[in-house]
Length: 177
Image 1 (cartoon, rainbow, N blue to C red):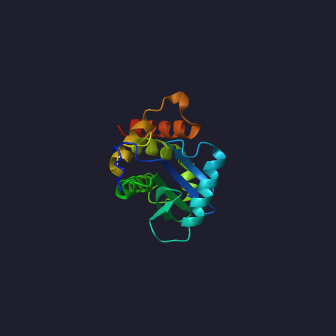
Image 2 (image 1 turned 90 degrees about the vertical axis):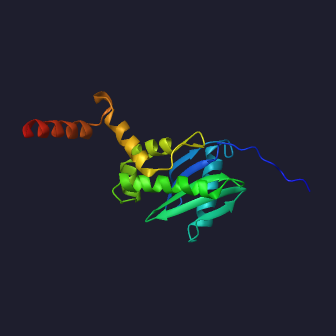
Image 3 (image 1 turned 135 degrees about the horizontal axis):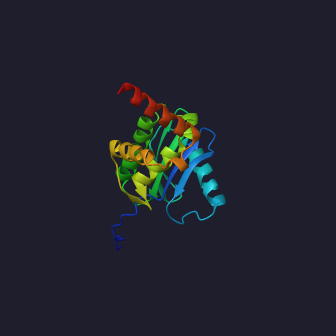
């Protein structure tokens, strides 16, 4: 039998998911057309949650895909790649995402804190993976880059609480001089 030789590819991640403890989607980013419609994506997410939420392992093969996952309090984090993908690379992405969020949320990685800081999650995922290509696996670098992006927000795009916090800091520094 002739062995199938696959060309190396940078496109290693097919999806990143975060589900709550009921299996409902909090965050999902799909990088290819394996599941083109939202209905198919939600069905896949329910299937993956049902197969993994009661186990203590870190990896599963499901529907021809390699799934690495981790749970924390009331959240389930998933990184999905093809069946021939290196599990260690997928696990590096998962660890980077979890550790980055842990630092950004001050070790309080749970549903409420995540929902209050969704912009940080979006920025962190964009720093780690772009179009399925792994860009960064160091959580320190990701947190640093997300913090830099957060500081460069123009005044017109900031929320009222951000503007008030910025004003408080400026007044504090002017009084300390």
